[in-house]
Length: 303
Image 1 (tube, rainbow, N blue to C red):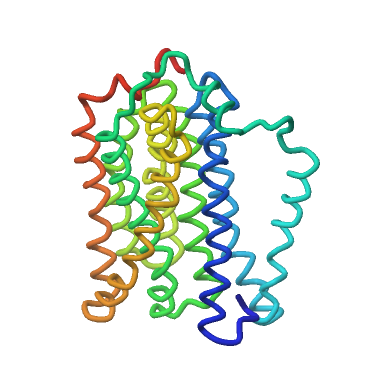
Image 2: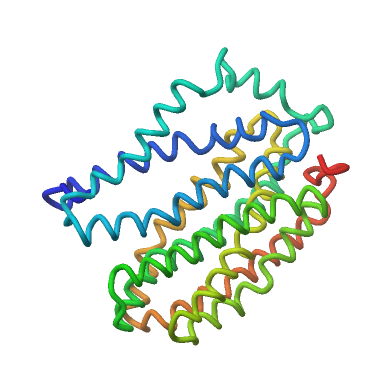
């Protein structure tokens, strides 16, 4: 990205990178779930948390590279990707594991054969709401912090706090969803997020990192439950089920960021952030309508 000579090349580079991510996540999520027969919430939680940790470290890494080596040196950030590609080649699953037939055969025997699209669409709507909140803050928080006079590395600390909270929340939420039930985690975890985000927006200094981190924890605590639940509701289309909750949700949110930017210019980013902070309550409302479908996606005896 740092070597792109103009906007068109920058868009093409970002599109290529986004395509790679889009190809990886649905199948990766499906394999992570298929590798275990029990505690699928924990398996998905580990998968999401690992990605969130990398996502959290990204702004810290790239800000240091740009600060010390210049914008043209952003290509140095490719090193972790090359390392993981090599590890995957030599140590990744063998013998064709992950082919559609094998993934279907590894699905829980207790899973219903029919497909339940209505609750999947409700779960997808909750994922879009979550992604919209996260993407809004990740995209525009640096500008908001810049207006407060913070430098590049200080601004990256706020992004790290939110994204590291995502990682911790996914791990905790995955464990709890296996033990307490997926619906309960989906319903209760988003409730305190608006208060935490509003507290963050009204606190100055490094103390604001605490409610921002906790907001990330609670916002993403339901993500593993949503993904596993969607896969149980579409047992023969697990890749599609995961793609709706990850790629589709974040893609739709990304398309909406132009509108968020426009509103930020008109009303001010502070007011827009306060409005966005209320959206997790929509997740709670949507999950409430999933009560009739709980048996179809709920964990059975900590499955």
